[in-house]
Image (tube, rainbow over all chains, first blue to last red):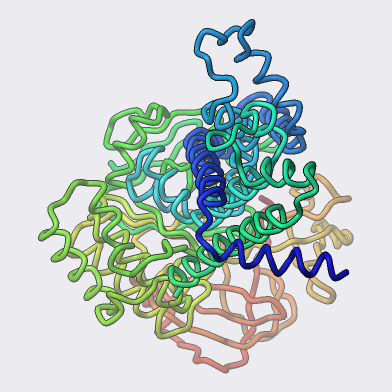
Length: 231
Length: 339
């Protein structure tokens, strides 16, 4: 028990100190997770909006597939992307393996379904009268869609936050496609896994504290923003 | 002519909810659309407001046949606006809500400001300009929705039950707004209502829907009835326990099911109290309301069911009843028909 408490105490000291290695790991994590979240939002939000608005054959099937993809294991995505970007893969010539770009690609694939399904749910919850009102006031299909997106903005924002939470805490893709190279592709989670393997709990716990703090901070920001807008 | 409809149908699954062989809506007039719940009023309004596609038939707007493609509809919707029964406002300020339609029409900022202020003045909501729209009461929301609609100066304005869920003060305000829009801007207005007095006071024409069809009759005096026997050569139909209406036997084709019965308000009269006369059966009742519309007198009598009688002013003045008076209403068999 003492050992655990000592580790925790050392970890807190490490987390609040400006340790260069720790900072690098955190910044790599934030960089790849933010990039993949932005990319997934650019793809996922319009995809969700399109699916929510349009009536087409096979719509239910598409939603079911997207829901299924929510449970896609990160190692499966890691394997899939690896098969494309490894030297022998279709995109091998681009030399993407064990780079931050590779992690971003994998993480984007992981969270596009998250953003899209949550966007569909957020838009579906919006009263149909918003769209009708926009249309009757002379809006085009696109302008009416923008009105609905605006009304669903908190739900969509929540989808993006959830997606960010998913990628910042994932380890499989970062490990398989990033390779955990120190200073380049070592993220919070891969560093934690490495430190655990080494039996060095202090850094692992310190990183864990930072990860939780990050997640807490983002949620706090989200609620603060939501509260202000609704006031 | 604002609208012209020909063989228009709307079908949901196997159910035809609207079947209108022909309908013409003249520009600059106020129309009221009446009918029981589920008669197709809102569907017809949605189709006319180009928010729903008819299943078949043709629709003309200002002489041009409407093609239901998105680009054409968007263009036409710029001059046709609908205010829903329970309007919803965007979650922003009242000002920005009204500004939406004007921005879409690319109206300059200065002119937008002037138009919004004018529209808010019209509905008496100028003080609410910067209020959050989703915090307004039902009546205030309705008034802002009208300001939103009238700000874009539509040629045609559709209103679905504009006063159904608001208090009397707001009802009077809405009716005033509609009348003013029609008088000053020559806006064609079509509104649905269950309030016959309001319909008569405001509308130039009344359209009545029954099971998705235009009946050509005002909705008043339409009741559910069931066949309950034969008396002489007349069929006795029960509207409710103890209230039987007589009509020619041959009219009751289906004696098993409940059917809709129309009692023509212009063919009834007041009698001397004898239970049955040669001219029809007599029913005791009390006068509940009297109003004048277009030189006709509308008298609402409660005979166990609310019944409307329409008579010419001259006839009414011969022996005018007053509210609360006990009267005998004579319903001749020829006044009764099945629809």
